[in-house]
Image (cartoon, rainbow, N blue to C red; front, side, top):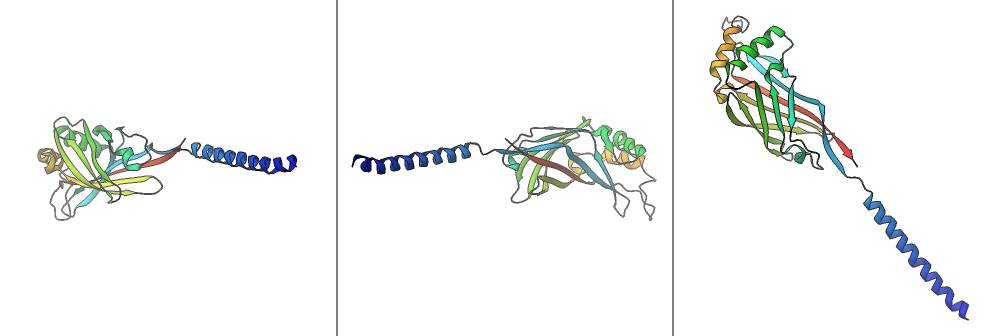
Length: 212
């Protein structure tokens, strides 16, 4: 009779032990779940621009090949990764695919400005849901907040695009200097030489998930 009494008790204890073991295993699985942060792939980053010439407003594209990124920190949320980002651009790295034109842009435009060996751009705000951002750009010792349109892909790709004008940065004299240096090259079919103040800017970057 004692054995019959002990049997249900042993079964109950075994079930209780197994249940506790399953809970521990489940807890262990939760503890081992990796945390994934977005990190930037620095080799994927591109800073490009399009300026315009002639009265027909023909685009001239180029990019800066040397720049530094600061304040980009790993984070689970992509917007948090770049919320304090800063780009420091070396204007001497101007590259349009035409070395002669590059030197004219560097010497007759950027070097005609004040303290413009570099251009800086700081992220002021970013809103992934509304696909918008604001950059504070400093050039010619003038700072301006520039609204940007943002495109963020689920694969971690990010594109910021916007437009600035030399008027905003008090760079009309530098623009006139560039137009004079490129006078004949900036003539259209009407014979008028024109260099437009508008410049479209684009920043492209790729972020990757780092799970630990």
